[in-house]
Length: 77
Image: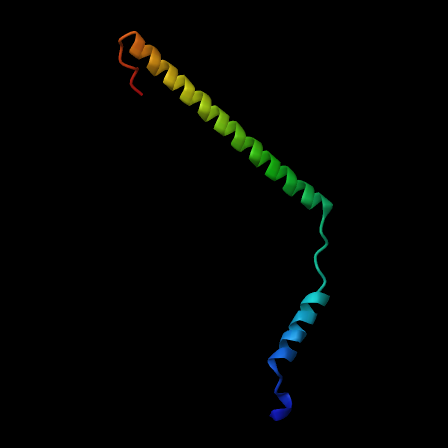
C-alpha cells in the first residue's frame, strides 16, 4: 500500500501537466466574428431603446406642459 502513496504536489503537478498538454478546441475566426457582431448588435439595440424611451418621455412631458398651459388635464393613459 505504501508504494501507492502520492504527495499532493505530485498529484497537482500531474493534473497541471495534463491540463497544459490537453488538446484545446481551435479558436475559430468565424466564431470570434459572430460573437463580436452579436455584441455589437446588442449594444446598438440597447442604445436605440434608450433613445426611443427618451423621445417618449420628452413627448409626454411636452404634452403635460401644453395641457397645463391651456388649463386642461392631460389625457388619461
